[in-house]
Image 1 (cartoon, helix red, strand yellow):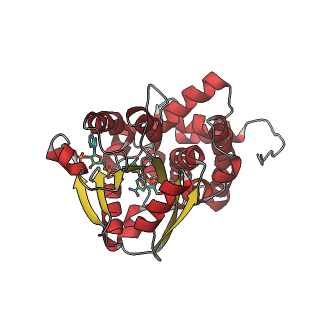
Image 2: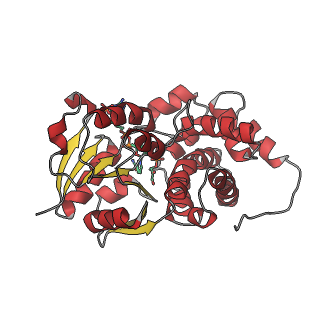
Image 3: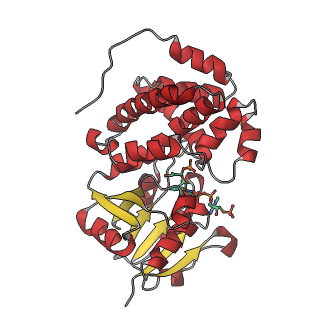
Length: 308
Ligand SMILES: NC(=O)C1=CN([C@@H]2O[C@H](COP(=O)(O)OP(=O)(O)OC[C@H]3O[C@@H](n4cnc5c(N)ncnc54)[C@H](OP(=O)(O)O)[C@@H]3O)[C@@H](O)[C@H]2O)C=CC1
Ligand SMILES: O=C(CO)COP(=O)(O)O
């Protein structure tokens, strides 16, 4: 019998994942909020419960799921790349709180939905325990969607969360016409910030040099398909944040993530200058040009690249 999958969230990514699972012969059902509250019959005979919700929706939906007591054999797959505002929780943290006895994996990587929907090849990583990640690889992996596994679920998730902020910075960079050299510097120094915060958060250094860290940075920091990049681009062209968001179709998690990361970094005395400048531009405290000047005027220092 073909594996049965339930996808929560019918946005761009949820629909794309539904397409990928169907391509692999899975029987896919989907739930979006327009269908009303979840019902227990949706969980019947499913092997994978995939959440492709924006972070702002995860807690509400996870609470609904938990209340329906889904069978313990179901593996939860979280594909969200965001941080909850008040709690600093990742989507996996939230799912873990509500469904502590289910296997939980995180799916992340350089996966611009529009390219995948065109049938173009991509790779991603599934973070979690080996049995659960193997099952997701077997159901979802293919010759066009190559899936790696990684036991460092936290690191896999943090890479995907952090890169959205650096994608906004790169959209600003390109919108201001600052060139490929400057963008490359932002990506590389953004990676250092990702490692600094991500390891503090419990991820392993090596993970951030993989698909969900460096890989996703490269995709979203260099493609106008990225909604986060688009927000930065519009800001660089003089739009306010609300105008930039209105011009951007879909969720740009980096806007909220930049603010949450700055609060976290301040509390834990972590230095994340690019993220701080992105947040200053998003909150209207600095113009893109002034933020750039602040970055370039910082004192010179040794290039320290975290390696362990
Ligand atoms: N798009 C991509 O390329 C990728 C996205 N991701 C991540 O996946 C997540 C979802 O992104 P994406 O699908 O692109 O976003 P979209 O903006 O395309 O879709 C968001 C979906 O979430 C639904 N939603 C919003 N609020 C709620 C709520 N309170 N309860 C239930 N559903 C809600 C929306 O419903 P409605 O239509 O009714 O408003 C919409 O269907 C994000 O964390 C993103 O970072 C990860 C990898 C790739
Ligand atoms: O996460 C993504 C690609 O890996 C999607 O990026 P955006 O949310 O910026 O569009």
